[in-house]
Image: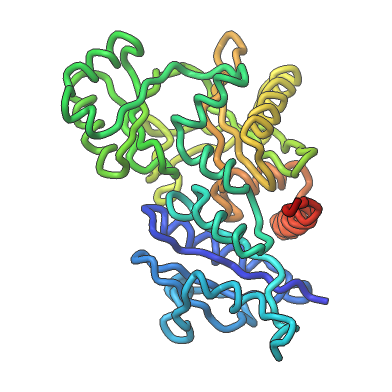
Length: 362
């Protein structure tokens, strides 16, 4: 029996285009002898469309917007749309698993995961708690601090407090973190809205830029070190890929370097010692468990000249094209892109079956 897989992509976030690229790549990689592909597109305005079953790979990203064959549906109606009742003539057509290929707010942050939980639909990736905490960099770092994970110093602000006392905010950054420092929206990924600051003028501009994307921002001290990443895969017993290194050719690994000009070097596996690799993997597993993650995570670190392993962040829905870091790390570990997708779907089914053991009535 084929697995009926619903691909959920697009979304209301600045990472909409990234999600479309990911969806096209996954569709091309899926084995049609094992999967039925059912596209579900969320427009930039939040409109949901369900398309016809895909019988062949999609070449043009615009096709994924389902302008020709998409039916507008209500997210609330998806429970009936995807999981017909036993009395329905379509009961044999129910979708088995949803794969949320969504990046950023309104998709990677626990909102869609919560909707799928309420409808009792199996889905790939992290649950509500891990998704929400992993999306909010401030909450994530607070949890990591409690877990004893070494990380850069940081401060955070919400827009209203900054508007009332911007000079005090800048003074605090300068006294506690110094320059260079990085200003980031708290709830966004793909390096959108991130600025590297060297002085008060660039700090002011960075605050204004970051606040256009979120009501909350985080400011982190600049760490001098190599940027290394590792993939984590699993549920209760996660395992790690090889460790890779990012070598930006620009000032830092920004959105343009990631998705537009490819102006970045990737070294896989990273040229580090076995002991350094083991510590990076151990910290990645520690972070995975601290957030109660499931399915997949990409854990990002700095490796200093003194061999200190400093956590940067985790990404609960990392870039997932065949040329993204997460799949490349697993490819080097012997897991191909199609195998990776199949593993994630199986992990989703495993986690859903585990949840069915929970007793909700007393």
